[in-house]
Image (cartoon, rainbow, N blue to C red; front, side):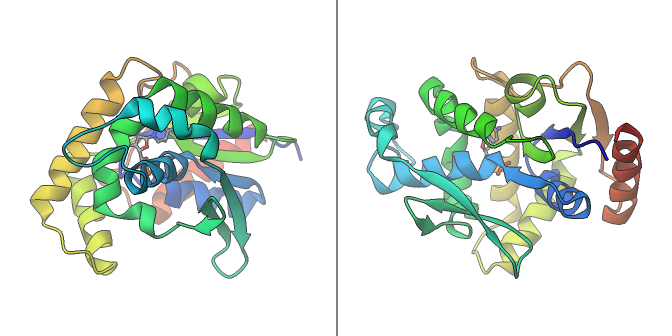
Amino acid sequence: MKKITITIDGLSSTGKSTLAKELASKLQYVYVDTGAMYRAVTLFAMQNNCIDSEKFNSKLLVKNLPKIHIHFEFNERLGYAEIFLNNKNVERVIRSLDVSQLVSQVSAVEEVRTKLVQQQREMRKDNGIVMDGRDIGTVVFPDAEIKFFMTASADKRATRRYKELLDRGENVTYERVLKNVESRDYIDSTREISPLKKAKNSIVIDNSDMGLKEQFERIYSLVSSRI
Ligand code: DC
């Protein structure tokens, strides 16, 4: 069967990663969560006094970029690859609301994007890849065979993310999560470099009122028709 490149972009908390993971596992493709890479750089920036809720010293972060090494390791038990920052597994800690609140500022920095986009392109060794993010169909792999753009109402997305954070034991309010979802949408879509936008030839999936199973079946059948 022909191996292809599948890109999944879209607004925050639209379930891109869940869908991408399931698709990759069914097709036996490589799965790459690029949001995790921007989150890992943000964690590094937080740990090295480059950013907090009051200030962002982007020059200091750019100076330190050569010290940031990100890699993924496949976890057999979980069935997907986990992210490592300088050889430390940060898969869990990068998902906190603290990181979510700073990640959009970090990902608007040109040098950060250049570094990560280069690494993302290198991950497509011999096709057979599902990559999710914000600029995958537009910038990273504009030549992808099939591109999806995921969207859902802000309320639905915040509700899902709120439940997820509560399940992980984080002390959050729905209002804070909604504010974060909306502000990330705004910064991600209006930044100068590689803003979040729908690639011309992408298939839009609005999953506000769609169950996970229904969504997967629809997307899998679209993908199957291209393979
Ligand atoms: O997919 P996510 O919510 O984990 O992504 C976190 C942030 O990273 C998102 O708000 C914007 C940024 N991001 C990006 O700028 N480009 C990507 N390809 C992926 C994520």
